[in-house]
Image 1: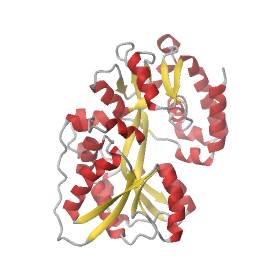
Image 2: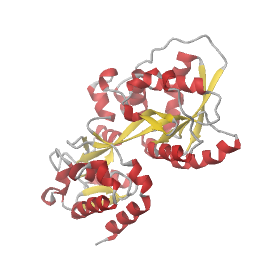
Image 3: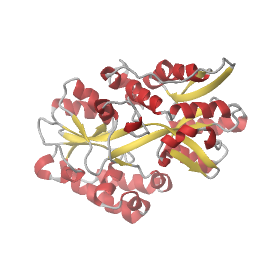
Image 4: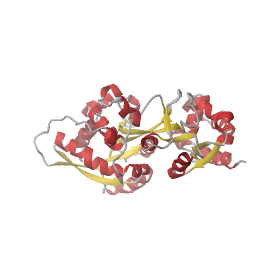
Length: 357
């Protein structure tokens, strides 16, 4: 989420439309509070400015914002804090991979009374995480990694398969060099059986063989967003993978980049709210998760933070333009379980593939 620093001016979807109000009836004022963790910088500041005040107005529950690092590092912190009885948050924000890890470790995130979060029914069941103890996470927001192209240089592809076409894209693509950044999932969804292919070593190797065929068309294997940004701006790169909202910000600023959803879809990742084991604020946490699952709140976050809603567009008041700025369909879900269960083999095989001339 460090890419949120690109949005520090409050540009992006917030520049397209004013935020819609979240409708809620304040309860009788009570001395109720909740500590909520989220990624820092622009992301956290936007929650403090736009989301938490609406929640407090609707429920009377005040929010103390807690800065947390990426969810993997935060999980390490919680492994020390929870047994010591010194939990820093009542609710934390976890990526699905860290949420799966936490549920496997046990004793870090508490089971939820999903009946106390009725608006979670607005979310696709995929975004309500079931662990060994039952529901343990409610989706907060999502973000997409998108196909992008230079519309001045190439026609919009209808499929990821076109990136393998050397006549169109020889030595002109920019792709992430991180094994878990989505190219494996995209290739699996495009040429194989998706996540199922990712679940075996043979499947991983078959996917990597297909990516080897793509290498002549790649001019930039980027590991920093600024590299891809500059490559698109100066014309060295005319296609690749990049963050949907940032690409749309660049396009709005007049740079030659267009984000598009091919028929196979784009990669969708998401974060979830999880209740910390040992928290005495389960009732307040349920109210916050319920508020977050409201379509009006999801639309508010899209407008003001640049995240994709986890509810159907039809349930929100987002315009077509606002929705397209942060979301689209279809989506490709990362093979989280495969990356967790087979991380060493996947990473070593990926690095070997990249190192080959």
